[in-house]
Each structure stands twice: as structure tokens, then as C-alpha cells.
Length: 328
Ligand code: ADP
Image (cartoon, rainbow, N blue to C red; front, side, top):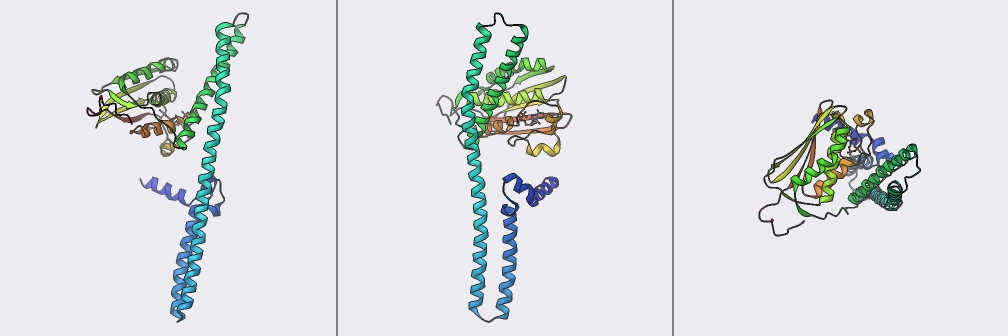
């Protein structure tokens, strides 16, 4: 707690870092301008006190007070301008990512179809080496496709346009199929993947495709960040009217000092760099936003070199909602 507070205070006062994060100069950072405002207020109060005790003229007091108000309005205006500029450039960046991803999606889908066609109909006469290269190109294309989908989701989240198409579904069935889809990766990574679904009420109202993305991200991470032989457990149970999903691994864990940054966009912990795992740092950010928009929460516990537990909850269907087709 004290450590977090100290870190926050340090971040607040680290004007250089703030300026670099926001892409503005130090004197434009809101913290710097607040300090300036504080100095002006203190000096103004002392000045007005001195003026009012030394000069018995109300005009001088009024003029000095007006000057202070003008100064404060000028600094306040600079703060508003900076915030506006940051918000504007943030919006432009999101729009750029969205347009660029849309434009990239079509040629990559075309490339994927062409490779599939080549591999299904025109392999005669191709050597083993050529086939190997084509399948590597196909693999890279798939990776690019996933990255573009992630970037599109991030742009939608940032623009508040992540529309969910909710429908009633059986949560255990959904979890089973998500786990099934990861079995081959688990096997190849020497990880045992176990699922236990202990829900009595099974129905949740969610966007099937998006919750599948959440399950997929968390299960893949648990396998990916288990170095060598390991075990990943997927447990679903009921907790206070919510379906609670826990995915536990005995992998590399997350360093304590990096845990507070974990669900931030593009953040990758030191463990992923050390273990040279593939990734973008977008999976958890997307998962957290999907879960929160679905009425649930996402959180985790982790100890470095011991393992991690990622949780998320989703509201279960109540009897009143059941059968009434109440969709969010
Ligand atoms: P990616 O896996 O593509 O890097 P994510 O957003 O899914 O991006 O995860 C962000 C970071 O969180 C990862 O780079 C990794 O450092 C850490 N992380 C996520 N899940 C786990 C886990 N189960 N065990 C250890 N570290 C994890």
C-alpha cells in the first residue's frame, strides 16, 4: 500500500516522464501547470495581504485581485488546452489505427485464401521445402490476421464502439469448447490442461464471440507463460450470482512491481521478454474491457516463479430474466 502510494507520488512529480508519455513539453504538463497555479495562489494571497495592510486604498486591492484572477484564468486555460490537445491526438490515433487495420484486413484475408487454394489444389510438383515455406507464410499470415483483429478491437474499445451482440448461452459448454481448442497447443507445450465446471445455474447472457476471445486469451497466456512441463487448471463456479472463471497455472508468474501495469495497452511484463514469448500486450487489455462491458470483472493474483491465477466473472441469468429474452 505504502509502496503503491510512493510510486504514485513519484509518478505525479516526474514531470519529464509525464511529458514523454503525453507527447508534450514539460511546461505544458498538467502537474507543472498545477504547481504554477499553486505558487500563484500563495504569492497572490500574501501579496494582497501585504497590499491591504500597507495601502488603505480599496482600488489597489481590487486591481491586484483582478490581476491574480487574470493570471489564474490564463494558467487554467493552458491546462484545458493541453487536455484538449491530448484528447484530440488520442482520438486521431485511434481513428488511424482503425482505418489502417481495416485497410490491412482485406489484403491479408485475400492472401490467406490464395494460400489455402494453393495448398488444397495446386501442390503437385512442389517440393517439400517449397511446401514448408508456403506453410510458414500461411502461419505468418494467420498471426498478422490476429494482430489486426486485436488492433481493430482496441480501436473500437478506445472509441467506445465495442458493440456486444448478447445471447443466452450455457457457460460450461462454452468453456469446454474453448479448452478443447487449446488442447493441441497445451500438448505441444507439454502442459496438462484440466477443466472443472461446477455451475448449477448454467446460463449467462453474453456475446459468444467476444467471450470466446477472453477465454482464448487467458488460456493461451497460461500455457504460453508456463516454461516447460506444467499444469493449467480451468475452474468455473458460482459466486454471488456470478459465474466465476479461474485459470490457474504454475508458470513463470508476474514480477510484483509490474503487476499494476498489467492490463494496460501494449504492456508486456519482463517475464515475457525473458522467455522470448510471442505477443503484443493487447490480449489482457481487450479481455478486461470485454468482461467489464459484459457486466463482470477481471482480476488476477500472481507470484513470480510460482504461478498465476486469472479470474473473471459474468452475471448469471436470474429466474426472472430467463425465458423473457432480456438481452443487454
Ligand atoms: P501478450 O501475451 O500478447 O504479451 P497480454 O495482454 O495477453 O499480451 O499479456 C500481457 C503480459 O502479461 C504478457 O506479456 C505477460 O508478460 C503477462 N502475462 C499474462 N498472462 C500471464 C500468465 N498467465 N503468467 C505470467 N505472465 C502473464
